[in-house]
Image 1 (tube, helix red, strand yellow):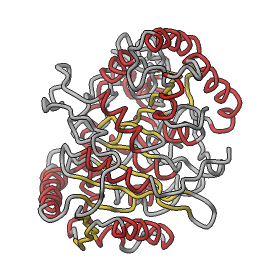
Image 2 (tube, one colour):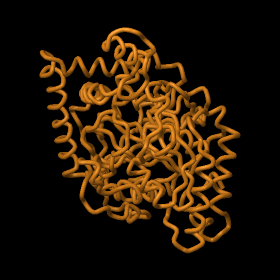
Image 3 (cartoon, helix red, strand yellow):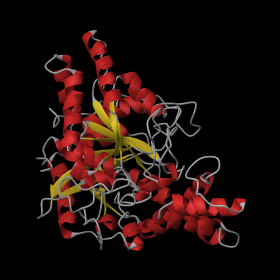
Image 4 (tube, rainbow, N blue to C red):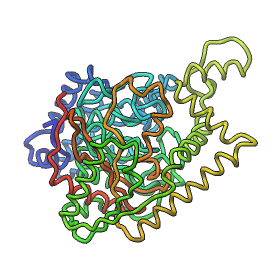
Amino acid sequence: MVELTITELRKKLDSKEISAAELTQAYLDRIDAVDGKLESYITVTPEKALAAAEKAQKSIDEGNATPLCGIPMAIKDNICTEGVLTTASSRMLENFIPPYNATVMEKLDNAGAVTLGKVSMDEFAMGGSTQTSYFKKTKNPFDLSRVPGGSSGGSAAAVGADLCAAALGSDTGGSIRQPAAFCGVTGLKPTYGRVSRYGLIAFASSLDQIGPVARSAEDCALILNTIAGYDFHDGTVSKLPVPDFTEKIGMDMKGIKIGVVSDFFAEGVDDEVRQSVLSAIDSYKAMGAEIIECSMPSLKYAIAAYYLISSAEASSNLARYDGIKYGHRADVAGSYSDLIVASRSEGFGDEVKRRILLGNYALSSGYYDAYYGKAMGLKQKIREEYAHIFEKCDLIITPTAPTVAYGTNENIDDPKKMYQADFCTVTVNIASLPAISTPCGYNKDGMPIGMSVVGKMWDESLVIGAADAFEKNFARQGAKL
């Protein structure tokens, strides 16, 4: 039962073929058996999970079950959970237990979802491998010698290894989509403002977005139906009505115009990745979609713009961690300044320090216009180029990542190489667009390859429907863990 989609589990729960408690216990047993090798969970909450399952069963028995009622999920460890350790995978927050729930957690709880625990990530969501975590350096369920991607690597690995039915992640520059591609699962980054960020530990506030990781596009739609919508706690969340994101499940692709941006298939993309995504595009063509060749000249500058903008916002957001108000406090004697320096030096890992330094530099007097100002100008240019493409296209298809998952020690000491690997994903965050990654093939070693379907702002339903149309004709393989 732990291998089933949410849609399949819903039928079994509602027909009383299985109970919510049995399903939850099956996942807890699977976590006990497997996660010692995978290291996806930082915190497992069996008592809370089983109590939630019993409560969900009452709703099922009374005929009041929502689509997520009784469904066991994992939560990325940068989403606040009342009374449950929330670390953002950093020593800085190793003892932080939030006194409140993030809005998405309130919505999941109200829907009767069962939270199994909190999963690992790159520290403060800064990274693409989950190897910058202070606690658990999660591995790939297809090959334990490789990374699961990041920063939502724990979320994607847990779904890929059948340690939860689905998970929540967050996406700032590809942090849901890239690990979903590496772990052979489906991950959705909604339009910026579609889901409340209240209770999400901030990395880059103009780019961060919470979204689902699951086994299918339809499952992602069911989760988005639950977590989307206006929240007075978040001044950036949209007041637009929330549609039913499953409305285009089973859609006909005939007449849908799909843009293929040549720049995303250029140098740096592995041949096997390129061929798998192009083959997927041929599949859409066979379904009746119209393929339109496009270009995005600004793509070659996107990495520079993204890392300047995100690091500038990170340096501001992380200034609050000083060892005095909250966060790790160093055991030093000396001045106020000495305490802050020691606490931040001990509490933050190398990658977080690197981005704080880069952000402070880009915002400093004399460099602001040269770096941050130009990056913001490029942000507008990228948005304009997407708008131009969407004048003639309904969707865009790209590789999710230029390679499959790499070895756990392969790129860790080369930040520039790590950053360049994000060029397929960061423009979506810069332009505030929705995108979904779903498996489209496997390389010669059996490692998953992901493609991304990108849509116009607020058009998640079409993005999900297009991904679902491909998934129905694709033979997905499971991890052998």
